[in-house]
Image 1 (spheres, helix red, strand yellow):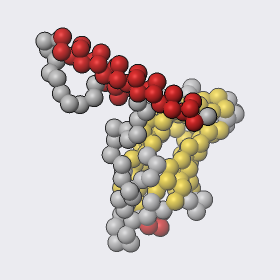
Image 2 (image 1 turned 180 degrees about the vertical axis):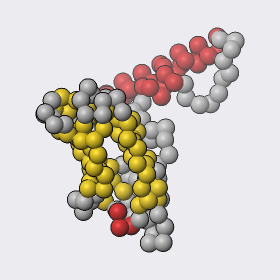
Image 3 (image 1 turned 30 degrees about the horizontal axis):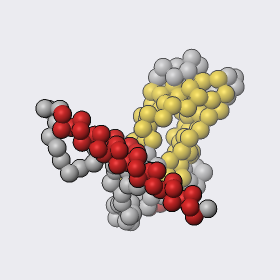
Length: 166
C-alpha cells in the first residue's frame, strides 16, 4: 500500500513537471509572453486548490447580514419560502436592511416577512409582474433567522425573485 502511494505521487510529480516544461517552452516560443517565476495556468489547474482566489476572514464585522440574498429565484407550488440571517449589532447602532420581492408568476402572491420571533413584519399582496421593496432599520433586537414566505390563493405553481441586502 505504501508503494502505491509513492508511485501515485511520483506519477503526479512527473505530470506536473511535464506540464511545467511544456508551458515554459510555449511561453519561450511566444513573442507576446513574458517569462515569470509564477506557475502557469496549466500547472495551477493540475494541482488541487488549497486557497481559492478570495479573501478569507476570521469573523464577520458587527452589523452585517450573515446570509445575503442577491437575485435568488424561487419556484413553488402553492407556497414557497427562503430566508436570511441577521447578526446582532451594538445596542446604540442600527443597520439598514432592504428586502426586494418580485412576483414572476401570472397570479397574485401573498408575501410575508417573518421575524426570528415569528412576528409578521410585512404582509401584503404582490400582483403579477410587480415588485415590492421595504427598508428596515435592524438593531440587536432583530438578530436571528428571518423568513420570506410566499403563497397564493389557489395553490398553483409560481415563481418569485428576492434580494436582501444591507
